[in-house]
Image (cartoon, rainbow, N blue to C red):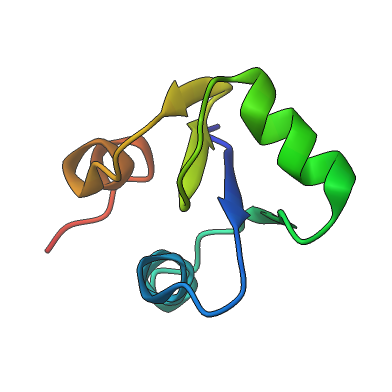
Amino acid sequence: MSSITIYTQNDCPPCTFVKNYLSEHNVNYEEKNIAKDEYRQEMMNYDAFATPFILLNDEPMYNVDMEKINKAFNIEN
């Protein structure tokens, strides 16, 4: 089973898009808003400096790759 964690920040349209997309396709995700210092530091430990930053099955995704997400969760468009 695939897992996804999304590092987000407030007022981030791409973050909102990804969260809405996953919700619309009934994909559970863990959100970590980097307004919380702990989550910001976690994200920076991956040398990631922009949101949304995604961990797909614990693999870092520095750019949102919808094809990869769709494949991991068997989403058909």
